[in-house]
Image 1: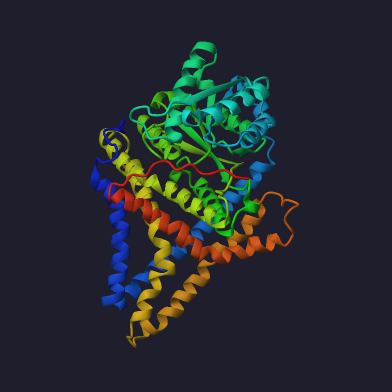
Image 2 (image 1 turned 180 degrees about the vertical axis):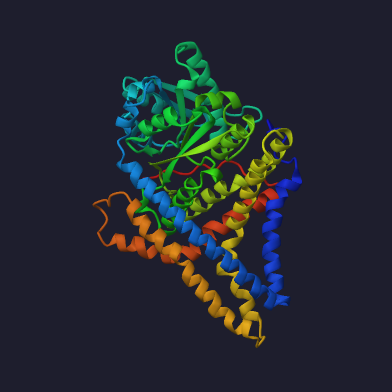
Length: 495
């Protein structure tokens, strides 16, 4: 495989195994302490729940702060602000839309949203990046796109990623790697006057509906932030295109992902790129475009830039939204299965740990503080993702069912845990209320009482937290632990 600073799947096995060992070690330790030292287990669980309560309170604070920034961004006139910036008229947008087996209606809706931007469409270049495995459908869709939109945008570029290329994992990353190289060749030949530093690239899922001011806001940030070519730009990711038709667990998971990202936007020092986002074209060319042999290309591209520039790379928060589809299947159970697979694919971001270790060994010019923080945040995030739901909702109550000790601590433990969890529900209430403000307009096919269902669904949070939070993360880490590497799973788009 191509590898990343000497690392590819199967190498550096200790670092591949470490996340799974930490997770399974914690689960087994919790069970063993519950069986043989239940009092110790109770104390440990109370301490952990107190720690989790502080995290919940902090999360609510940053989430509310981020939501206020989101509302301010929605009210701003980004087109006007951009018009006041000298030289902004030279900026162009290059939007990559990788597609595989999507219906033309989904692609068309995305392109109509791009054509309706307040930023001039004649300075936007669209790359529709298909797969040879879907040749017939893709070429039919591509022909329709060229016919309908070639006169709307500055350029519409069609690329088709061949199947079976060496050192690749079939998926979005390898598709983008191929498309990026092809586009670089085309622009060098056909747009020689267009400077690389004047192009802002965006990697969008093909179902992404960008806010009408997105590209004006993006261009404004790029034109005004310090050192703009050393930053990626992360919007608020909403999964709401079809949210009214999704099952309740899917809706909760969708909002949970949005709220997690909004919390990260308020702490930009922790922020990596995720899902649909934007970045400098110069950076993409400098790092050789997206890696073609991994699954988590949306976050790996940030790591590639961070390492390439010796730690001098960051993510600038954008508080405007892009909206995508929730996962969908034919029927309720199929949708839940698709949700599980999507969460497992996102949890496969655990693959970044050995890649970071390999890169940081080579690039020791990156300040130690930055390297240590990146490693700690990644390990801690993956660990709590996999273990916290189990410790809070299941394993935390196991020692209480076993212990028969009459000590005051033991007798008071259920009430103590209940009080902690009662305070922690502030996070659930906050999420439930904010979710109503983030919902798109209710379709006429749904009754007004559906809004109450949207509130009541949050009672399922503990179940969803475990089944579609902890279990997919444990699944991903266990596969990595035993060297059963995950391929790319395409999220089905269905409206």
